[in-house]
Length: 241
Image (tube, rainbow, N blue to C red):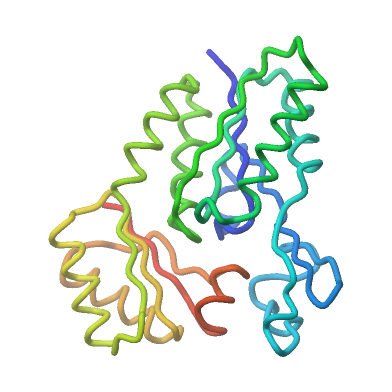
């Protein structure tokens, strides 16, 4: 039975109650806000992100995780007897973490030329909890002793079974119709939705459950990156078929 460490970052927005039962390494995303280095989940929470955000928003100069942080986790994985590491990335290729994790892999191989630790990057190409659900899937498989190839195959299959619906200027009725139609048509393994106000998100979740039988796994506050591009009051809801 191989041992696989799952690593992700706080951009996956995983609530603590969903991840506590699994062995997942969640790295704090680093924000440079007005020349102050702040760590998500340490220096600020999802709830008080907007309290520390200065105006204008362009005072956020960078969002990243240093390569040295990933490198430290790789070394720790090897020393703890892990044979494999999967780094599950949120967002798309333009996220700076996609570059720094590859830098860390190159550094690890250069510093540990005889190491047999296998490190894989999985690009979820999904934001927020849409990536978080993939992290949970990988963590469960790793806990059950699945091989790294089995985990990577499962992640690639699950990635295409996610539907995401957001406001995008829609009225409540339009957003509800759009969410319901996506669920009816695609019957996804996972469905992630979010609304720009808490009351709307809860109402959408209840209506979709009543009509389609999709009971939400959770309602959760969007993390810093997601809230930054959505709304101060944004709340998301997550379903699993």
